[in-house]
Every structure is written in C-alpha cells, then in structure tokens.
Amino acid sequence: MKQVTKTLLIIISVVLIAFGSWYFISQSSKKADLSSDNYTADEKLIAEVRARVWQFDKSVQTQIAQGIEGSPDIITFIGGSFPMTKIVEKRTDKIKPTKFDAAERANNKALIQKLISTYGNLVKQASQRFSIPELYIYVVMAVENTEGKVNYVSPGGYVGLMQIDTSSAADTLTTQKKRKLLTVSDLQFFQKRFGTSVFSASNQVTNTALKDAETNINAGALHLSEMIVDNHFDLVKDIHKIFFSYNRGKNRLDNDGTKNLGIDALINRYLGTVHTVGAEYVIRALGPNGAADILANDLGILS
Image (cartoon, rainbow, N blue to C red; front, side, top):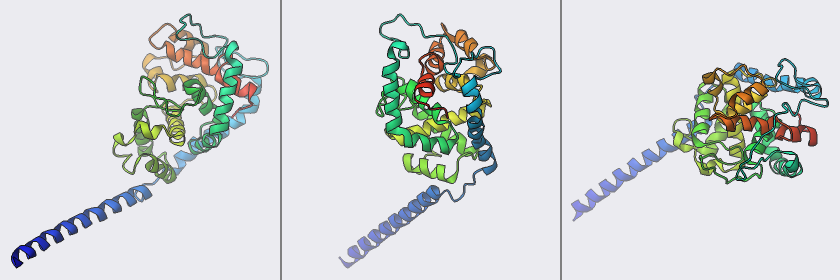
C-alpha cells in the first residue's frame, strides 16, 4: 500500500512539474511576443511613409482649393477638386439603386456626420498611426458601410466599418511586419486585438475581432497604407487609383496595365467589365454627390 501511495505521489509530482514548466514557458513566450523584444522597426522607412501626410497637408490649400493638376482626365471645378469627375453612376436595376446621387445627398451627409461623431477619435488615431489622411478613411467607411454597422459581414466575407476580410487583414499585418513598417507600439496594439501569435498564425484574425470598431478602422487604414507603398501611389494625384485598388485588390491595375490612367479613363475602362464594381466605387467615392464631395464641400473634411 505504501509503495502504491509512493508511486502515485511520484506520478502526481511529475505531472505538476511538467504542467508548471509548460505554463512558465508559455507565459514567458507570450510576454516576449507581446513586448516584441526581438523586433526592431525601420524608423527611417517609417519616417518616409509618414512624410506623405505632411505632403498631403501641404497640398490641401492649393490642390483642394484650386484643383488637382497634371492629368487631362482630372477635371478642375471652381471651388474645389471634388467631385473629380462628371461621370455619374447609372443603374436601372431597382434592386441596386444608386446610393450617391443628388436625391440622396442630404441623407448621405447625415449618415457620414454620424460616422464622424461616433468614430472621429478612432479615425484620427488611425490616421496618425499609419499616415493616412482622415478624409480617405472616411471615404472608405462611407462607400463601404455608410450606416456604420460594425457587425455587418457582407456575403463575400468582408467585415465591419471598412469592409476588410480576415485574409487581407492577416496578410497586411504579416507583410508590414516583415518590412519593419510597424512600430513596436503597432505590434502590441494588434497583438492585444488579435492575439499574441497573430504575426505567425493567420487564423488569429477573426471576424469577431474585426467587428470591433477600433480594430477594424486600424486594420483598414494599415491596408490602405500598404497599397499606397506597394504601388508607389502619389497620395493626391493617384487618389482614384487608391480607392479602386482598395476595392479590387492592390495588384489589379498592374495586372491589367492600367496603372497610368487618369480618373475618367480608369472609370470608362472598367465600366461594363467584370470589374464594374471598381469603377462604380470610384464614382461613389470621388464623383458628383460622392463621399469625398460631401466630406470636403459640406463637412469641411480636407485632410
């Protein structure tokens, strides 16, 4: 009996020691991962990326007030550069009515004002963190999810305010970390949101996590930043390409050889094709009564 008791005590001791060792290693790993001790950001490259916002702000007074120059497809309007095209979205399908037109302008303005009042602080933080003008973040939110439904998941699996899916968010996080374009603070922010192993396990990015407004806005802003960097877009003159790429994917213009097209040419190139929705997206973002038109001319959001 004593031998049996002794054996049981030994087994229990071994199990407890093994569990204790596992717990210690696990917690130490989490702590190291969360503190990002082994990660060093490329501060020089980050500074270059952040300089884009300064360049954008410098451009606002001249280019927003007088019109963006340099492309025959970009129409200059008296009183501002928005709308940037006269092309309007034409839909006869009653199931898919035009969402941004003169009749809906007042309603859309009210909805966008609600986005600003509800998520303004989060947008400002994401804008500063990833060097994306607040105007651009609001345009995406307005076109993607005007009613601001944080829990909305589209039939295609796109989630929340900025309609970003789990695979795009995970890929962006991994890519930007490899490029050292995330600060330690950025890493810790996303690790707290998605889990400490998010940069090594893509399945850590879930729909549930992306339904959180702050997480979604930051993931969307980072995705915008990645596309601009990858495509060497000019933050002002390539604005139509930025929004098209957000909708159709960062490689679409390169794949189709359409990267040099101005706004009207880009819209006309894709209307009536399998990427019609991308052309319509640009119209809703930058066209008459579009999101940027309302944000800039009705609400004074210029940067």
